[in-house]
Image (tube, rainbow, N blue to C red; front, side, top):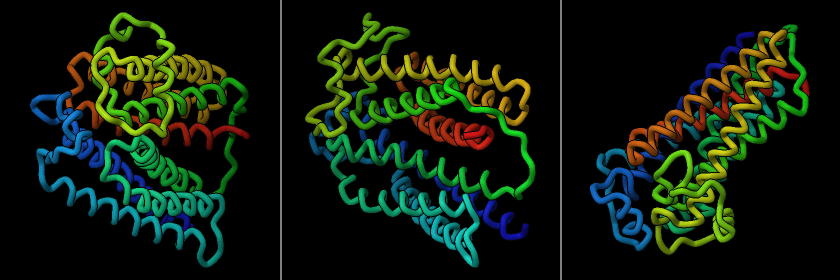
Length: 305
């Protein structure tokens, strides 16, 4: 019991540090390359052309290194505590995946200085969200073992989780391609309701950017539209999941938690577009995605496979 409580406390601390990494990383990327500069979206073009830029707060880079290093050290300690003196499963498995992800992101960081690499940007964005998710998985799976009533997952729940994952990945690709300026209207993108044929090429994560997306750019609009449709579908499906799990309080509350966070994340997205993508809302949108995936992990833990 004492060991399980220690593991849970370490996992929660690592989860909070992961949120710090997501938030500070988003601040650095956006303040130096667009949303925090006076002539946005012109700064996107400047940074992609190699013109140096500085964040509004010079200490942000130092803070990012401190938080990321602290998270890595906490991840090492967490994995060690999960495996020694004997494996604490399934928490140990998730702790190992968390540590492996941290080390992988450390290696990818070597190429992070070039913002034109879509794949590197995408990996960093998704990897940051993964830090929070895996740490949270360790926390919820290290609870003292006791009889728990679990709901049945089923195809609707799987479809809801798949739609949410797709929405998050598309959102990360928007950030990786600096495509926020492509769509500044709601609910359609510059009068378009469906991606143009040439816009689907924006789904390729191996592109090397030569410039930022301009308003009305087909690839950026395609990503925005697909991201919105996937999120809307996920909201409908999670409402159905909550209804189906209404007799299982743990699973029902988990599904309602995901739905509430998804609606809040949608509201932040709408407000962000309406206000012209201010820096604070953009960072909040990144943090919301991390919390959403953690809530989805809780739902997965509360249902039978």
